[in-house]
Amino acid sequence: YSQRQLTYYVRTGRFERIRQGIYRLSQYPSEPNEDLFLAWLEAGRNAVISHESALALYQLSDVLPARVHLIIPPKASRRHPGLQLHVNRLSAGEVTKYAGLPVTTVPRTIVDVAASGLAEELVVQAVQEAIERGLTTADSLRAAAEGRGGRARCLVDRALQEVQA
Image 1 (cartoon, helix red, strand yellow):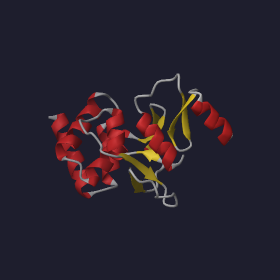
Image 2 (cartoon, rainbow, N blue to C red):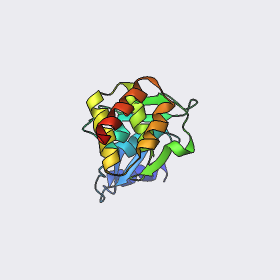
Image 3 (cartoon, helix red, strand yellow):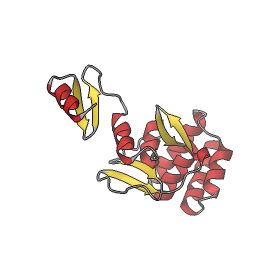
Image 4 (tube, helix red, strand yellow):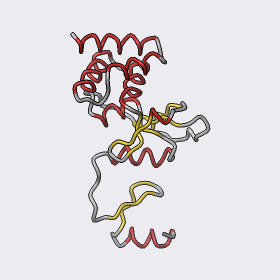
C-alpha cells in the first residue's frame, strides 16, 4: 500500500496503526503474543525470541519479562529502544517455530536464562516443566549446558538432579 492509501484506511477506520510501518485490519482483534510479533518485526527477520521472553512463551516458569528479549546476529542494527537485544550466532538446531514465531529451542532458552542470571528457582522450575511436558530431555539440556559451562551447567545439573529425585 502507498502512504496515501494507508493514511486513508487509517482515517476511515479500516486499518489500525500499531507502530510506525505496522498496521492491522481493525476488524481483527489483538493476538495473545502481539508484543512478541511486534518486537520481532522491529528487530528484523533474523531476530529470534529468546531468554525470558522465550521462557514465558513456552510457559515454563512464572517469569514476567519487563522487556522483550531477542537474539540478533552480530551485524544487525542495535537501535531498538525498549527491546533487550542479545548479540549472538545461533545454529539452525537452536531455533524453532513456536506460536508462529522464531524462538530459541527449549534447551537453548533454559541455558540462556541460567547463564544470564535468572533466579535459580525459576531456572529449576523451567527445567522441571520442560521435562514433565516432554518439551526436552535431560540429555539435550546437559548437552546445551555443557557448551556454556559455569553457572548454566551447575544450575541445569542441580535442576535435573531435583527432577530425577
